[in-house]
Length: 483
Image (cartoon, rainbow, N blue to C red; front, side, top):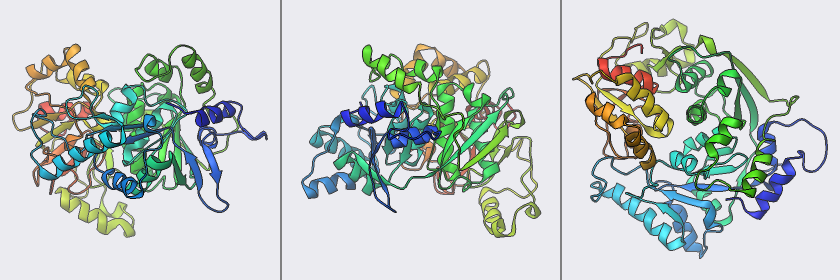
């Protein structure tokens, strides 16, 4: 995937810093400096981009811009397209019913054809959510710079990459030049030391972290996650943690690559092979923060203090342990009280209320946060031998066709069917109300997705964010339940 410019810069960065000097560097420093093309004094940096991922929602105007200027896509081999946000998760072999959704997906297909780009459309065996497709096919690799017109591009940082979301005008910029203008962010390291308790996973770590730091606690920073609990996570859990970086305002999040990373990438279709693998691996092993590297901010959490988490409000920072209580009004600072009360009114909750045992209506397993095979293993393992609650509508949506195939190969689909669940087809689904999977107004949905904003899952829908394990417990009991 890397072109000659980026390969040369990466070789230089293995002996960081490239231009001499002896300062200790963070992981972020090493990757960023290896991709700098030019720097504008008192201005932005021109940063080279190794991989550009594209979906149907934020790209139409960008392609129109190229067309109007008579430009081609500068490096088509480093641009990958997939349809995900607008596609239905049932009957994908039939035309999309919603006119706007169908138009956006059709437009993406036409743009891919016109500009000669790799495109995974409906019913393509590699189709799926953009942040699932990249890693599982080996496009996502350590040391890369990766962008996409989607805020949760931070997911790819789990591989030791600088990955971040961009706007439509920036999509056009990358399509036309393979570069982007960016202001260098500050650096933060968040350490999770110690071991996680039973039934606690990466989603709980993320919701706990955001509840402690707030949705603006990492604004202006690029975060490196470190510590024993992070090192113990598998790749899919690391992707979940990095995915939610944006929900506390961070520009992105990343984790130093290690043997867990290398074992995941090795052998995937677009991963390096043979001598190129050996060369890449040698470089990848240099991608870690130096011993004396200084971050602009550093925070440490005790992993053993984290419990299974849920949200109670309308942003991901309004989280608490399942056995906790919603804060009293007196515990909220005066500036935030109006929005706090508005949020609780929307959710139908009250200050001081316990949510354990509250009846729910929908369960959603999926999204770029928790739509991978590990998430389905967790869910299936819990519901095995049990039955879905009669009052619950469950949408179980794999993040890609490859994930769905693996679910079937492992027999997880049979476990789910026997427990009363139906496996749907891949897509973003009920993460956001851009497709047919919308939660009705006033209904409570325990969701493994990333955002619980008002109307995020449908007009008037009430979202409670949780891990796949907590979602499974809610699905079989029909209420918010300690797994």
